[in-house]
Image (tube, rainbow, N blue to C red):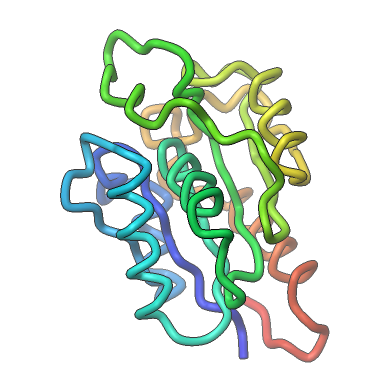
Length: 188
C-alpha cells in the first residue's frame, strides 16, 4: 500500500491556493489543523501532529512547509518519532531563531531542534527565502541528517512566490516516495 501523505501546514494553515491545500485534495492526504494556526508552540503543535498520526492508518509521509517544518522537527524531538512515519519532505524551513517583524509569533518555535531525525527526510530550500537563509536551511538539513535540494530562487515556495500549483514539488515528492518505499508499492 502506498503511504498516506500527511500535510503539515505552517502559519495560517496554508490557504486554499497554497500547494499544500491543493495536494490535500489531489492526493487525498490527511491534514494537520492546529487549534491556533497563527500562534505556534512546540508542545501544542506537536500534540496535534501526534493526534493526526495516531488517527491516520498505515505508513505515513509527512509534508511540511515553513512553520510546519518546525512542527515536524519539534514533534520528532519531543516524541522520538513514530514507527509508521517513513519519511518527511520539509519545504522552506523557517528560521525561528531569527526575529521576524511581520511574524513575531514564529519565535514561539525557537530554538530550532538541531538533532538527526528518526526517519529519512528531504529539505527543499530556496536560495532567496526571506524566512531562512540558504546557508541556514542547509545547516538544518545537515543537523537533521536530511538530504538537501535547492529550489533555485523560489522565494518562500508559497502562493506569494508563485507556487500555488507546484509541479516541481510533486516530482520531488514522487522521488522521495520512491526512495523510501519498497519497489512493489504503487506510486503516484
